[in-house]
Length: 298
Image (tube, rainbow, N blue to C red):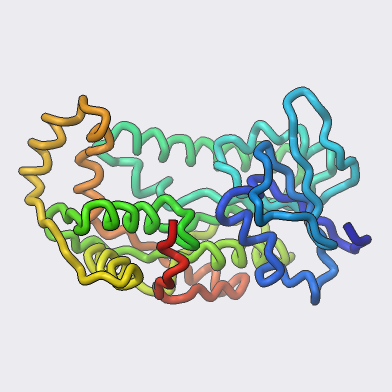
């Protein structure tokens, strides 16, 4: 790793957003004096290699990391509810500023009829609270970013999952009218937002929702997945009351255990958030939802 005026620590570097953050096209290492230390408990992916700007530091239980330098600036891309596991590491390295990913699910799943979704919302909220309390006690400037539906490079749990189901079934089941509004956000835009927020020294102790530039209905979003796959849209429209009966009958079978009324609810509810504050404060400019073949590849 080259000597630099600024070192940025990254937690969750093997995640989709982490992988994109550490690419030259996102962090712009050729035109920057920033270097990155990527901390991870997992082995880096095959496409994640050390460069002059990126140093990898694998974390092992009960072992001190092999990077001992001071790191004042951090980006956390791991689930926010595990961030507290790293508070000691951050403190030891002299953290002064941190950008952390949460999710708008912190709001949208709070009142879900699905208990597992309520748990996710609770974990997100608790993670945000723990971050704020710890940061205030230790004089650390914090910024929370809450992205909407993340997609990209066939590695996400949203659009990529839809594409896999279409490949398997040759159609896509829509529950009810499926007209709930969505704002898909590309992983590259999330990674860029993290860097923009970290670099914007005029903002601190703020939480921002970040969404894609385009708002579209759920069924239109699915239509674009078909198009990216080179297929004509084929839907199986299921009335919600029929799905409710089916989910109750088959929920004990392993293949159908993920069928929940929360799925039907989400397809028909608007899940939209303004990113105007992020655009104003750190020039966040997301792209429209224009899927490429690489975004639906497995």
